[in-house]
Image (cartoon, rainbow, N blue to C red; front, side, top):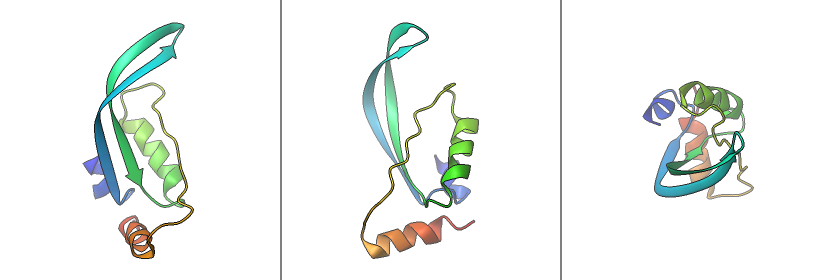
Length: 86
């Protein structure tokens, strides 16, 4: 995660430990302990962020979901934008 901040692809990442995932993979039901990461970036930086996560992640198909911010504290959104200029 720090690499993505250093590369200015994200402004911030939150680590949420203790996630227990149950899912079907290659025909079997699997259970895994995982850490959920929530990254803050801009829409303009998203495509390269997705590519970079896929390069760095150990999973063949990592969970990457984009949730656009419809609204937010203007100063925070400005900080995200400034932090992701690269």
